[in-house]
Image (cartoon, rainbow, N blue to C red; front, side):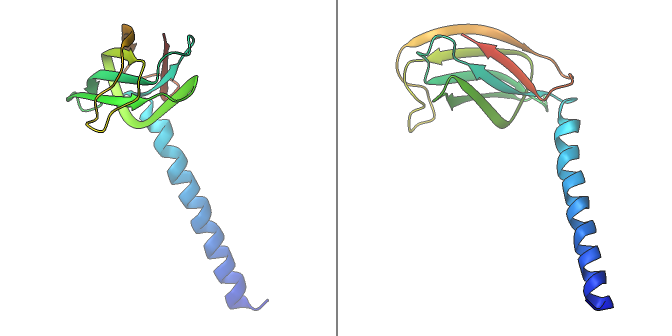
Length: 123
């Protein structure tokens, strides 16, 4: 391998390492400005959850999340403080609202900062 190829390979490797470090640092910092939600369906009767609360910017937001399995991780949405969660027997409809009957309703405390990016709750 000539010098140009060796240099190119080294630069490529450094760029890859730098990218991985930057990607990894995003999740580590996220645990200090709100958390993502994880829902564990202990009963097995909940196919969507309506979440109503505040995001990491203190804006009021509400959204329906499908819960097709026992363990559901809803990434990309960051919550903080008291969040109201309501489970439904149907999935999220085309209008973004849950369908079916209410299966549970509760409040979840989501800390602003913790070691994990996830706050888990269950029915």
